[in-house]
Image (tube, rainbow, N blue to C red):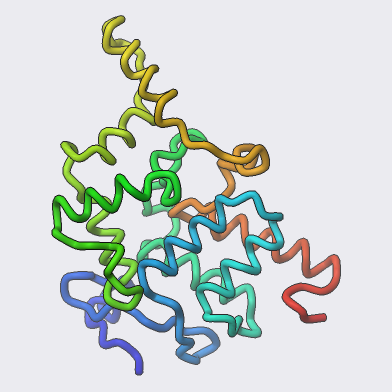
Length: 224
């Protein structure tokens, strides 16, 4: 059943305060069920930053999001996946999780810090919270609103902090923290960091481009 979204009708976007959060996306005038839970989208992001081949990243991401039933209109499926992943924010309006190619967090490496932050601030046990007990958009809103006093927020700041203009003591400390909490990545992942899994239009542009390349080369997702 299509979610009732009065705000979407009025201005073309979903308002988390007044609209029912989507559990389907519309492709070719058909409501397609998606894996809307927070765990699914965390896994999707982890896949996009993994050391898998580009084609395998696209394949796995779409399979996760569409529960193994990828729509025939793959281009539209990619666009709707990006829209959902970006929490309904349109192109150019979402803040990237990357800053000049640098990531501020990693769901795999920072799992303990994120778990502790949600328990401390919201009293939510993410280990016990089922995928469909927390919508991805709800998780994203809470994650972005974590208090600056929490360790994960401090680590995110250290990773992206510019030491220019800082005192020698402060700059030295920041550089030390950057090394301690540097995100460990495979060579292939680090090389493609700027292109992959951004919470903005870059993710869509990347997967669409790869889809077109694979489509021209022959079989993709088991289709001719």
